[in-house]
Structure formats: structure tokens, C-alpha cells
Image (cartoon, rainbow, N blue to C red; front, side, top):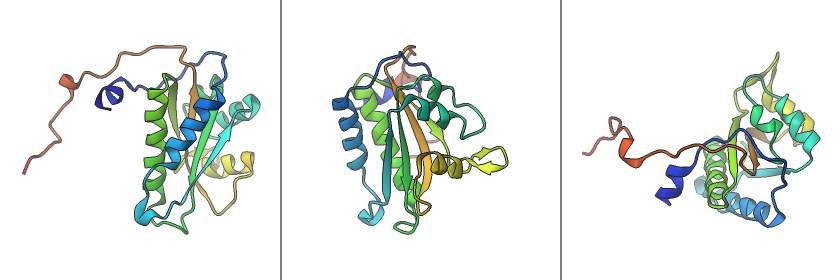
Length: 169
């Protein structure tokens, strides 16, 4: 697992190829396997394969969203704050599960932050919910832009990790 983690990089350019249904199922399974506080399971996942909708997702947030312009798959990670007071943590764990499964499948992914981000005068969360008809009871953490890699990046060498923030007591 550590080797896969060291290889994982944010990918922002994807080939014009669809992610297979088998791989999509694996990604969803990985998300659903994520733990949550008190096993509340507040997370919901919106799998978007429609290229037009994926491109419109890019316009829902100010700032860098270029990965959504070539991604063939987007998974919106949301959660119900009424089910968990730590919904954002639960959703982040699920999103991380997706990131790691993407790497295991040899695909690429970029986490597009939505929570606390703006879209002009509006919040990005409200724009994503409006575009995809996501219930108002949910809050959106992020959009995972996923596809077949069209760029390669060198992994992180374990030996080069800074250990300054690690404290052994």
C-alpha cells in the first residue's frame, strides 16, 4: 500500500477514453468501504459520466478546475451534516479511498475542492448541487476528476519525505 501511495499524483490531463463500468464499480465499492465516525455512513456519491455535465462541473467553482475539462468520469463526494457532525472528515476519508483505488486501477485522478470555495458571488457547493439536482440536505466536499492518464508524473520517494513534523514520544 505504501508503494501505491508514493506513486499517487494529481493528474490533470486525461485521454479521450471512458473508464470501464468494472472500474467504476470498483471505485464506488472503495468509497462505500470507507469508515465513518460512529459508523453513521453520511456520505453519498454522484457518479457523472456525461461529458457535458462534467465540463459544466468545471464552471461551478472559481480557480483551477482544468482536470474536469478532459476527465471522462467525475465522482461528487457529498454527505449529510444531519447524520454526522464530522461529515467533512467522513467524506474526506471516502474521497481518499477513491484516490487510492484509482491508483490501484492504473487510472488518474485529481481532487477538486468544493467545500468553502466560491463560484463568483455564490458558493461552489450550491452550484454543484443545482447542476446535478443534489438534495439540499447534503453538503458537497469535492469532485473527483477521473480518467485514463494522459500525463505521467514521478512518484514521491519515501526517502525524501520530511520528517520534521513527526514526533516520537
